[in-house]
Length: 498
Image (spheres, rainbow, N blue to C red):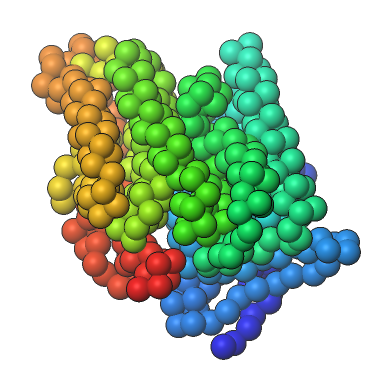
């Protein structure tokens, strides 16, 4: 098996180096800044594609060095890290294009894109982390680099949301650090390994391991927005649309749930986690979050806040899937990690287009907007129907396999949760679609027809159209060998020895 220790470092360096350069670029040099951003995003995507093909062919990518005795910095590419790194790289390229268009006339763009690049590096570091120490390092780096993006506008509302964000995420980080320290002190270095490290453990160790598991999951649950630790996420919706897309689809929320997957599968091991008795409580917490987030979404009148509570609900499908203790549940969880990201970023791109082009922020302002912005409205419709789980869209694949996983594990009550959540998804998305397509349009929508462009800048329009097409393709061609669904099957077979 070939070894390549440099490629994971190059993936991180593309964003880190560009971040430091961007901070020094004057505001008026927008073309240079845009060129550097896009070049870094494209190079990163190409490097991740090379690693993806290599891992598919059995090539091994890992780099590590000792920071202190018994403390190792480690990066590696395995099937799970490739899923998250691939999602991040693709969506970050599209978000970069979108952010360039969205912030075209805004102040402090060098600061924004500098921290934006730090977020990219942090997220890819989380994806490629080879052990708990490295994961924690990039996890906290992501917390700090996302804060300037949340408060970018500098308004009182933005600063207040930033404080809430820091209180939640730094508290969660402290719990995570405590869990990592206790794990290291009691059990040594914890590299991420398929099957985990605790196949044979004395029963006397169960209380200590159960407490460490609680600390790790509690710390990760903040970013994963599990109830009751979700409060920072709706508050952060005062941030610009590219940041909202970043938080919900690619970076912060996904970092939390990705960490939960790592802890369950690659630290404790799914079989030992089941014997430890922690999967059922975690599945109940995830189910409560799914239903709670959907119900709260129903009562939101602000479009981005409705999407935020939808994220609280939808991301917890991933946590629920891994607790089902079976390969089918694992498939549903891993594939939803990708599909939810693509669907949710589409919705936030479209919400940003409505706000930037027509000043729409409230749901009751969307009446007849499809007459003025048909392409954006079609993309939003694709994302909303995918979230509901309409076949043959990507969201259907996720929910179908989560349902099969519930049957496989004998947890039939999960089917009720999935059905209830789907009905609630329809209840808070379909009225929006009705307003967009079937209500009489506002006169000012029709009187503000564009003169030289279709409906808004192509930098704002192209990204949601691309992701909307992906929502369809990932559902119709789910069985393609390199699709997220096929990778999820490969990982499930690996975890359960099939």
